[in-house]
Image 1 (cartoon, helix red, strand yellow):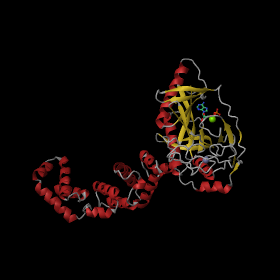
Image 2 (image 1 turned 180 degrees about the horizontal axis):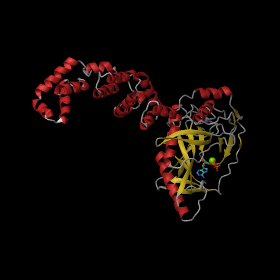
Image 3 (image 1 turned 120 degrees about the vertical axis):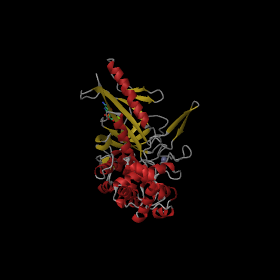
Image 4 (image 1 turned 90 degrees about the vertical axis):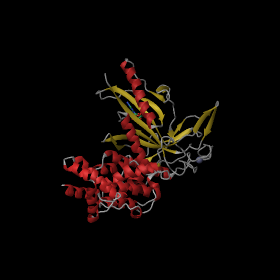
Length: 477
Ligand code: ADP
Ligand code: MG
Ligand code: ZN
């Protein structure tokens, strides 16, 4: 008996607004040097304090929804979800239970070289809770994060393996970063994920009972949790047992999931409409303004690089992983008109150097202008710079900036195409290598590259190897 697994995600993404969702406190938990720096009566839930909805949160949320090709609901509203827990100073979370700001959508993702589409059930806005630290029998509460805005994205149960889940999350990350919706860094708790998993007999066309794993916050932990939990369920099913619908926690150290709460003891959150906030009615021109900012999505760029520029999928993936990089690549292509060479100079030379050179850590830090790299490619294409020497030029550009032509001239790297000068070098090499010439003429074809090498050496690496090649062929017969 074979089982197929089905996975649905509930993803929390911290919106990167200047201030928190309902108050003027800085939304900057990562930058806070101390606990409880960014708090006020509103986010601390003091009696009588009133929330004021942050328009930037709404704008970024709507853009986030549009990036996932979701319907935007012109009318939505907030609900109170009440529960008591020390990380929640208000004793309720302000969320959107019944009328959400964003409805159905779909996200296109490349998985193993294939374009796939995953449905979004909806996305709603809600605020985050604070952070508890348990130490020495005490619990410390830090409310810097309490009241920070979150998008909760709920997918349909549409994934069937962990590869799909990973690529989907990476696509979300790329888009949210490129549009400044969120930095979506899992390590910083800016993106975290509840993973729902069920197993059903292959080909049954049905969905099994789902188990929810809470708050996974690294790609590798998600992968291990999907493997571990689906094996647990498979073992139960194969031994004739049934799966309980429950919430489990993933214990990454022990590599297993453990029961947190079953369906029976589900909490009663006493949802009711938030009395301190008006329903949210979005004006047409506001929605239109958000739509205006939606230029080409990363997935569309990737498809363009594949289909129009004829790049390999791996390269297209690397170039679209980060908006600064794809912007740089496109600026370079617009100057060189040579997507393939532009791609290889970025992916094989420039990125390696950025990695290596300490003062430069991303494409944004490079000190030279794009047109200098375009000039390098132009000179290589015009046979005025060998590709070997071009690497030296790019390295110098990355280390010290400057101009490609100056670097080439200062280091005598310009390729010599002067026929008569190159011809005399060829003649000298042939005259000084009589035994090798005899060897070649008696049929040892392999030795031909020895002559090319000698010519390159004699020209101090500046001769055009193509011309040497032709001259040698002619002269050696
Ligand atoms: P509820 O209303 O009980 O919260 P939902 O239908 O909203 O449940 O689903 C919550 C999450 O669980 C969604 O991400 C959804 O894709 C996922 N999910 C629902 N049913 C299944 C299933 N049978 N297997 C895997 N995931 C599921
Ligand atoms: Mg739910
Ligand atoms: Zn506040």
